Image (cartoon, rainbow, N blue to C red; front, side, top):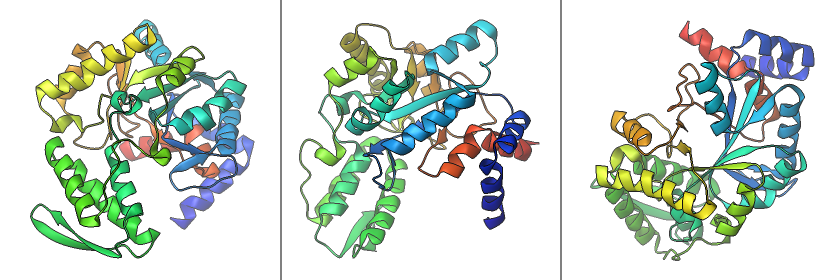
Length: 333
């Protein structure tokens, strides 16, 4: 592992090495995903600071063209191949910190991006469920807790942020395995065990952007796509709910923005989170394509893979210039 890090550091430190790496990798669109942002020079786990995001955008502009997912899919349908030397910037969920910190960086550079919106989150009707868990753990005064996992109590220490992060990860992973109704029941039981009462609407830390902000961005180079109504794991809900999550989210966004919505993002995008029924339902709802997963060896309009982004500059350059693509191609071979 240490040797791999040294190799990545060496390759990404010299432009000639980066260009060589890019030449060796398959010329497929680099599709990146961000979720949360923060103020310049402010480090926070799981978020990218505005100045780092700006640096990432500047590095992309040196050697690549930035396209929205919709334009990339249109190109594929017309030419039967993906556009060369292209990058797609995608952002999930609809947190207000994107509007506040990242959107201005895009505007400064006249760059496009694709924002996948969870409709009821932006409408102020729901929390995103991982945030409810995080808020409960952060707010609880408990130093330990016993939580019910499929009828079995598991004890967790909550003495510090590290302990709470472990508890959140285990609870979150468990939620992903549950049917939607059972997931909601489990989260209620966790909050009860933590002896906290979650507010009806997200607190400032977890706030969504407004419809007005979304409409502004839609007019200024941000493609809006659907990320469902409520962010459930789609393989774990019934057909009626699936139709609601896919169809109603699309129609609501179209009504709010005054034009068609063509792209979709599957919530969570992990193994088992979608199936053939879900994919067929996305097609039937009228979407031209969707993003899913991290398997860069498999490219299909309904399962366009993405790469996660952090503040790690070496990791970002490695992915941008094709290191991740090359690694996965070698493993496939």
